[in-house]
Structures are given as C-alpha cells and as structure tokens.
Image (cartoon, rainbow, N blue to C red; front, side, top):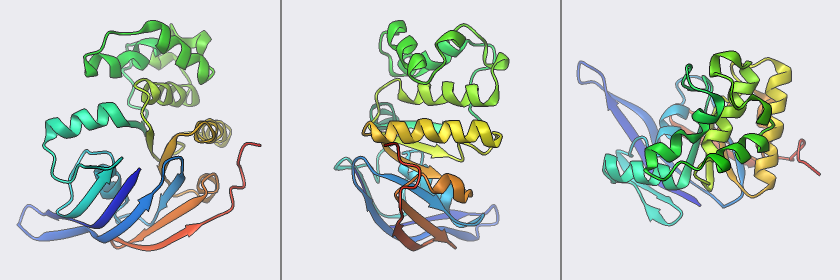
Length: 230
C-alpha cells in the first residue's frame, strides 16, 4: 500500500535558512495495517502525514502509494490521488458549520465531480451510528458526533487508506474511546489506517508504531493489538 524510500523534506525559513523536517525516512505499510505515528512536537509527524496524504511532496526520496509513484506529481495529479485513494480525519473535524451532517458527508462527491449519491451518504451515516442526526447542522452536534460525521465524510469515496491526525485530541475520554472503537472496526473491515497521536491509549489500538524524533524514524515496532475487536 505505502512504500517510502529515503524520504527527506526541507523547508526554508523567511530568511532562507533551511529546516530539515524529515531526514532519510524509509518504511513500508501493507494493505490492511493499522499504524500509529508518534513523536514529540517538531519531530516531523505533520510533514510525514502531509506527504502520505499527497498534500506535499518529498524534497528527496520516493513515495509509492499502491504502486503509484506520487513523489513528483503536480498539485492537480495529487488532488486526483487524494480523491481516489485517501480519506482524511482531522483533530478539528473541519466540517462546514451551516451545513447538515448529511450534506457534509456528501462533500467529497461534489469535489470529485461525481453525481451526489444521497442514499450512499445516508448509509454511511448509519454505519457510523448517526442516521438520526442526518438533518442536524454541524454546530448542533457534540464533538464526538462531529468526528463521526468527519469519518463518514472520509469514507464517502471508498478510499483504501484513512489518515487520521489526532482524531481524539478535541474529545473527552468517553467520546475518544468511541471514535477509536469505530476506527478499529473500520480496520477490521479491511481499511488501512495511519494515525498520528500523542496518546499512548490511542496508540494501543494499532498493531504497529512508528516513532519519529528530530525528523528521523528511530523506531518501527509491532505491538499487541490490545483493543482488537473479537
């Protein structure tokens, strides 16, 4: 599914000083894996997630997604890859506030140019347990409900890969546990999930952990799937 080979990312400050966000990072992730990415602030997690999500490109190295070398794709080409292959879940939900839950879920179809399939959007909302909230505006939903809508939106185009950036960071412990159970269920159904988190409890839902420090991959370890669904 994912193969990163000797990937580095360097940015420039306004004064022209180079900043190395990632340094010679290599790893692969197979289809159906659930992997967390951890590390202190400034370790390169966001830069890595941006490259994995085709929001950015490496300065050096290659990134293959499902066998497709997206390392040097243009913005338009990467946008097409995102529509076809990747679903995003963010800490801040990123829902349109004056739009209903159902309409938020339909947004990926609008951006991809496909016909809006309301029945499909409704079915996905049912899948995340929010059928009865379909007509409610995002501002009328709790944090946990908003994140479920965001996950439903991420699933709308049937992406094989889900990228989650601190998906429980704005939630209380009960809502956070519910979201992690939902993500674990989606993993059990065959989705590949890469999740960035600072939370050890959240990380324990995954079977593998990548640890970054100072832009380098310092650990890649398997771990017991404590919270796996029977």
